[in-house]
Figure 1 (cartoon, one colour):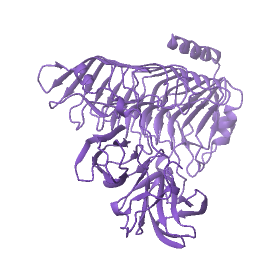
Figure 2: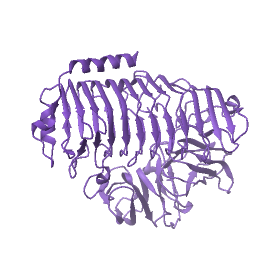
Figure 3: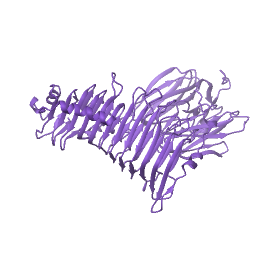
Figure 4: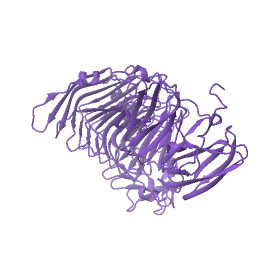
Length: 636
């Protein structure tokens, strides 16, 4: 039904524009900058505009597309973003905003091209992931076909709504080659009644996510309904071929309906990644992936995160996964929520392996269990006969853990903390921070402490804002950490535990101090870490009945919970794209104890937080741990 409606709409445009197209060059072609010429042709009111062959590229600044238009890129013609332009982070080569009844098509050898590698030069261009080749915003009845779209500074095609219309709708993309784009071949933020057919999504590389197609709304007011991808090839992308990440949607969103049919995925870093709602209750709907083949992926072939037993349904039907040569099992399941994992069905799924191993790995479930994971998976190893995988047995091996589902973290209260009596302090061990983090430091009344911040650029020149607060939460200073090391002398008349709130998402920061009573907040906001193994120490109250530490892995990481006697109470070799609650029961003790969590096999980004009743602060050495002030009971 959806395809028929789109065809009728496209034909309606075609029949209304039978006249000979007007040649864009008649409006005064300039080989150094053809923007004015082409924009005049687009705005002329002509139903058909041909970007004709002039013997050189059409170099353009941003263009605005119009309604009731068929824009034809002529045989062998390249329309290219003018070098040296597009300095703004948000400038796209062609923008259709609120447009209706638009066809953008090419004749043989037609190309839309930007200058991706130029935009990587941060001395000439500010960092951006939004310099798209074609941006569609709140459009209706649009067809793009028979084109190569390459080397954009963002997405080849970007699709969303606008203030008047929450989704672009009645869309058809056919026979497109989207090659070498910076962020995605196609980003689908909000779309209704969309068909992508016979397209090639190739070699995306530049800034994450770096996928062939990424379905990823920004908020619950957006929608992904009646979206179909058919007969497409995904190859050579730096991330997954296909991402369906809909964590921004919730139960108020229109039900999701995405249908992926007869597609081929090969030689991407990952094959298919599906991550459903991060909200509760979650979005409803159905994602179906059928008659597809996934092969030669370098990372995770099939990754499924946050699927809920009562949420959106995901089905794989008649899918072949050729996992030979991959160091990871074919399918990974994980969750970052405390809701049981399910509503996942495998119907006639075949996994080809070059070694005996289970086709599914459960990477991180936290307190959640596997429930409604059903269907049939068959595994073929080398030249051995196919054998069924015991999906029911695997599901039973990961039951829900209700004792962990009440995980909460205490708020950070600097007013009740102090340095341990008699502590001399030990220099802070290197700990790579990235994101919103808080370093805390005790300073005696009338005293001073030297704190140093060292930045390592991940992208761009470091310029990290840091807010300094006293023990009552009042801001006393604003500083910035630039390239290399920045020294700061903390002075305080009243003393107490002071906070340094570090706000940066693209720079790795380490903090060092030699004074006692220091650490990092690991509470509701989580301690956000980057590269590097670490050992983190924390105080456990004597009357605490158990110890809970949440380890959240954006990328793979291992963790161990270790008691004061050096005994390991809980351990996970690897958790990825999910959570693990490291847990231990304990007998009451007369005095507080110092426990530790050891993080190892670290890939990149990971986070931790301490569960109540632990005070949410960790230190890199037991000598630096903060303790409860004897004059400030917790009840205050």
